Each structure stands twice: as C-alpha cells, then as structure tokens.
Amino acid sequence: MTSARSRLSRMADFLFLGLVLAGTGTGFLLAATTEDLQRGEFIYRERCLECHGVAGKGDGIKAPFLSPRPGSLVSAATSAKSDSELLRIIAKGKKHTAMPSWDGILSADDQAAVLQYIRSLVRFTPPLTPSPSTP
Image (cartoon, rainbow, N blue to C red; front, top):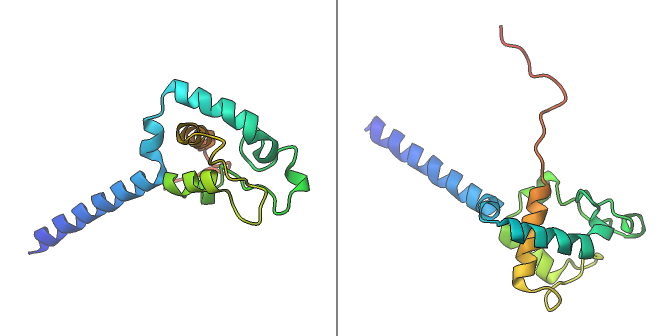
C-alpha cells in the first residue's frame, strides 16, 4: 500500500513539474529558431528598447518620464509569468501604463518572436555570496 502511494506521489510530482515547465516558457524558448530570435531582437530594439532598456530591466531612455515606470522583463515576477500571459500583455498592452497594444501593429508571429527574445534576456548568475561549507 505504501509503495503504491509513493508511486502516485512521484507521478504527481512529475506531472506538476511538467505543468510548471510548460507554463514558464521553457518549451517555448527551446523551439525558438535563430532566425526568430534575431527577428525578435530587431523588433525589440525598434519598439521596446526606449522604455524597457537594452537588458530589459525597465531602464530605457524614456523610463524616468513614465509613471508607472516600465516593468523589468528579467525580474522574477515577469519570468514566472506564462508565455500566454506575456503574449496577452504584448497584444493588449497594460491599462494605466505606457505599455501599448501591439495587436494590429505586430503580427502574431512577430509578437511571439519578441517574446522569445525577451525570454532570452533572462540570465541566471551564481550568487555573490559563497554557499555555506559543509563540515
């Protein structure tokens, strides 16, 4: 009985992990082609850079003049959003902010390419403090 529960628990853990990975954009980026990523970068530099900045930190040249300030595209909060959530923001914009709707301006493929580029901006770096040593 215990081993059956253990197996079910492991299966549930794997299912949960799969759902988390599917919702975080990991699969989306793996499918990105170099051409799509380059197109996304080009569009980002043309349409998003002034507000979101070179590295996507929300520190573009227009950022100090906007209220609220543009969001950081590399923050943990943004990284945790699913691709569909981010695509919805790109398409529809954000009310009461300077983030415009890109529907009708950018095709769905171009919006997806920009998202792929935004996802590529997230860089995980090791912590600055060393981990505790083990005895």
